[in-house]
Image 1 (cartoon, rainbow, N blue to C red):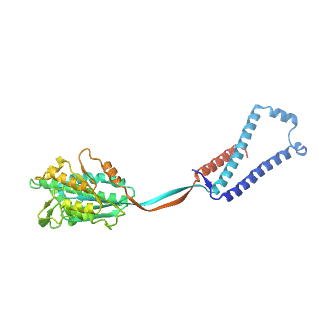
Image 2: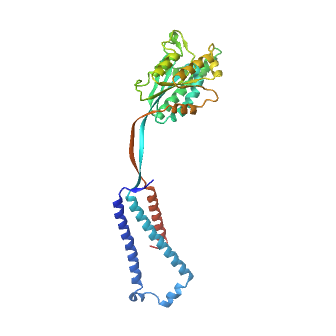
Length: 375
C-alpha cells in the first residue's frame, strides 16, 4: 500500500513555515543566552567564584540536566506536532482499483405451511436466517402455500427485512403447534384459560390462512405441484436468461387433493427445468413424517421429491439430525451467479490516523516540558 499526499504543495509550504518557526525559536533562545553572558550583563550575576561553586553542586547539576532534557523534549514536541500538522494538511491517502458487479442470483423459499409440517417448518425457518445471512449479494423471496399460494415476501436483498418476515413465520408455526396441542385436549375438556388461549391462537392463525387456505372443503390441502408452479411464476421476468434462479422448497409432499390439481409436482419440476430454475427439496425425517401423515408412504413421496429436484439440477435433503443449513448455502453458492454491469473504479482513502497520533504526542511532549519549567 503506497501512501501519497493529495495536497503535496500545501504540505511543502507548511513544512517550510515550520522550519522557519523552529529556526526562529532556536535563534531567539541563542540570542537571549549570549546577551545574558555578555560583559555588560555579567555584573548583574554573581561572581565567577560563586558560579563555580554552584556548578559543582550535585543537586544543581541534576536540575540543569533535567532542564536540558525537558528543553529538548519540548522542542522535539513542537517540531513533531508542527511537522505532523503539515503532513496532515497534505492529506495522506492511498488509492486502489475495485472491480464491482451486480449479482444476479434470485432465491425463493417455497414453504408448505400445512399443519403436518409445523415442526419441520419451525426448525427450518429458525435456521433459514443463517441461510439468508450467508447469501451475500443475492435476492431472496418467500412463497407459502397450502390450498393456494401467497407471495409472502417478494425478492429483496434487504436481509434485515427478510429476517423480520422469517420471525413472523416462525411465530405462525409456533401457533400451529400450540393449536394442535390444544385441539388434542379439546374433547377431554379445556380449562377456561386454555379455551381463551385457543381462540386467541386461532385469530392469529387466520391472518396467514386467509390467503393459504381457500375453499379447503372443495380443494383439500397441501397442493404441492400448484405451490411450486406458483412460486416459479413469482420470479419477475422469467425469460430473462441473465439471472440464476433457485427455489428452496420445504414440503412432506403429502398432497391431499379432493379433485385433480392443475399441476402435480413432477410437472411443476418440468416447468422449473424448462425455465432454468433449480429446485432444492427439503423433506422431513421419517419419524416426523409419520406423526401426522397417516396412510402416506415415506419412501414414495421422498423419492418423488428427490427425482423432481435432481431433474432441475438441484439436490434433495432429509432434515434429520445430520441436516446442515450451511451445506445448503454452499450448494446454492456453487451455482455460479451471473454478474452484469461490471465496473472498475478507482477509490481513494484518506489516512489521517498516524499523523494525528504524532500531533497528540507532540502536544503531550510540549505540555510535559512546560510543566517542568522548560521551553
